[in-house]
Length: 106
Length: 118
Image (tube, rainbow over all chains, first blue to last red; front, side, top):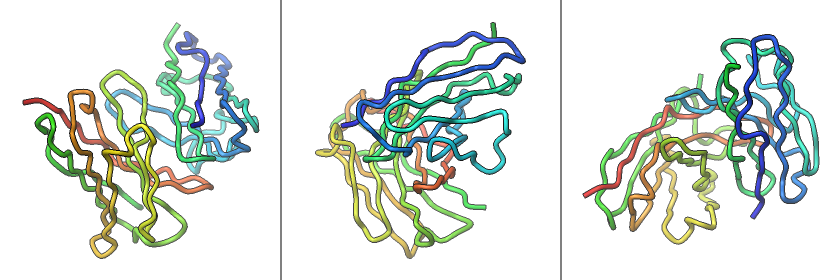
């Protein structure tokens, strides 16, 4: 099984900050990685697929990078609507999600 | 616009079988290269993938749940279904259905809470 480890688990930031979340895979997953945003009581929303491809309709302040086992999600300028929990997901072999990163207001 | 909607009992007794259906609207479940997944999320916890099905009928399951899970598809009804047997309180969660595709498929159902309790 492929394990996904996100860091940090919680992140405190202010509006306008640049935010980076890291996701590590226990083995190479090439670029088969997605990032989701989830708000309380809502289904996850796809932000990024294939490590760096922006889903249609997602603001350009979101970007993804990486390949192999190390990946990052960057929010270039944090907006009020971005306070949420973020999950990485590998889909190289079945699906596995990271444990989530909660982005809180500082 | 494709939409997914979960349906099924919100309360299941311990040791019984949880059964949910996901109805796909706004598009054919058989079109394109999509496959169809079930995911669950216990209250306050992270996402756990349960399994997936292709419209060919081919399935893959989470190894930790494989012995208890069956996913099936009914293309004539544009639906796919989940059965989870021998449930316990640990299976209490919000259950989501979603699509999957190598180049991004962001369609998820709104989720349905299933509680396992006598």
